[in-house]
Image 1 (cartoon, rainbow, N blue to C red):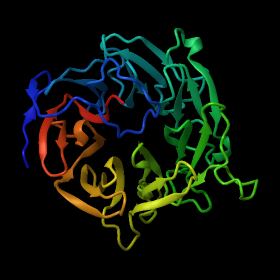
Image 2 (cartoon, rainbow, N blue to C red):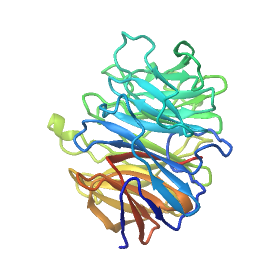
Image 3 (cartoon, one colour):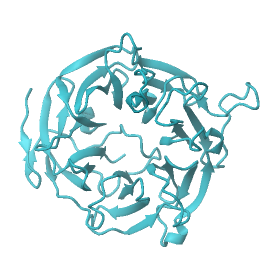
Image 4 (spheres, rainbow, N blue to C red):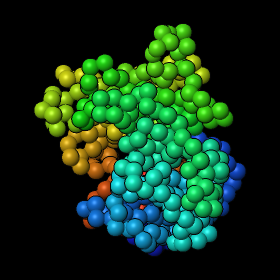
Length: 398
């Protein structure tokens, strides 16, 4: 395995093209070439969760520069992530933070705004998980703790103009009163919102399935994905997997969903529940196909499944949980479901996967002394990018 550690603020040569590829769940709207198109946005968090930041990796020709963190105020907050669209990137504060901070690539250390994602300052935390962008003037905030998807104007000049509407998920609430929406993606003018529907950390409650609600972004109406069934049934797509976490959409391959299953079994003294896997969602007829099953109580070769990255129609990756901070990387073929372990990436604290330039896999690895991103082409490690904190979301220009 060929590796070389690169310290932050260094400039190094690496044989990579600067055109960007997809592979994340945020966004879904198409944009033209923009400022920062050769910049990678990395959300980071301290090893002890004492704070977080955003680091930028800038490309020029075949070189790149790893820049220090851009966040000033709020760097002591740890439950954050990042999203990007067009000429801007954003820092999203999650549980008990509830805000969105906008930055421009031309002046990344100076926030344009910091707006609350709460309808009322007295509201309990909505715990916003991610943002799906339809345009510069319209985006959707997926909230884990509220039965509403916020519709926002990312270009709002004042905070009063920021929240412009909402989509109702209350039909999907479970016994604890929340649907637990965990991700969203826009495909062909439709917003897909996946909901875990957990009760006391349990995704195995009898009769309560995970669902995907689908909305027309032009009208705001929820689409009935199975109009021929009982009119009293939920309109969304019922899932056979539980505890869904991450969408990945590639226009040339399709929409995929990673589900973890009952990884929280120990909280309630249950036996492990292997009800996760990788599924493919048909965005036209809304059918669901199991691509990789995580197994059952007797045979679960990958452990609990985390994260997902799709390179192309024959190459994709997920992470299998062995034990705390001990994960293994697996390659699978989305067309056949065939799985093989990637021996070079086993026994590591793998925190993120993303598809970057030239279709290489960017692997975020958390480590107390060497937090980093490693670039993997399917056979070899091409290089290692050292970070100041552990990597979370890794985002490229669309």
